[in-house]
Image (cartoon, rainbow, N blue to C red; front, side, top):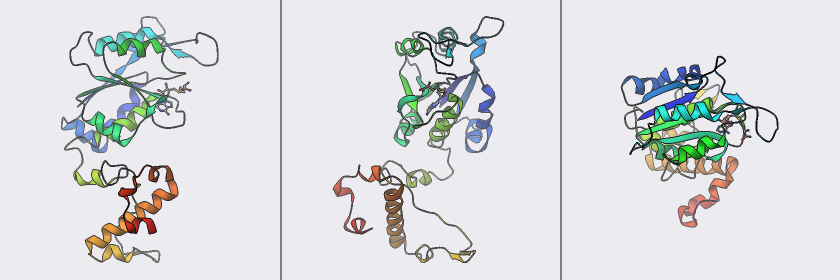
Length: 247
Ligand code: SAM
């Protein structure tokens, strides 16, 4: 997969050289290109922002450098354009399902906004020649799109075939499509069997795979009911068995 990032802070993306994603880049599974938006400015101060039309606080990112940057990265009239992702708190929610659908795409471009965001004509213009998604990480406001881009790339990158050592770990995760889609994963443990007088739950040492799977489901249900009752509300009645109803 190829990912192009456009930002005024390219140094944020040094984190993509670390750990799983760093290895994915070195082995060619992930081809990341980081572009400095200021390379498409033409004034002495390399200006990328201006005051908002209509008044109000803050600054807005100017359309000209963004238009030139996107034209250079995605030449007009390409028959197979990438998907442009614009992180913004006013976008559609980023979810595991969206990460999985992006992981199936060959090419993504991420436009990292700053200040009060990017002049909206950039979004409208880009939409005439490529699919564009405005995506939110959640109901909070970051200072810029770089950290949002890193979060999305990590979630997408670990789903690419060959990136994780054990592909099964993806299917057991919270929100994983299938059995876990509407569940949070329950607690996990490792050695030693007793730590600070706290033993690991006996069932996990029993070797009884069926009972362990049941225990894990019970714990996932409890945790989901506690922290995300909205997810349980999405379950169809037939998704719950008799035992679930007693947990
Ligand atoms: N004025 C904008 C609003 O209220 O919707 C907030 C702009 S924010 C200070 C600057 C940039 O940070 C945004 O353009 C976006 O790139 C990024 N950003 C902030 N919060 C985000 C979120 N929850 N999800 C994704 N991107 C976010």
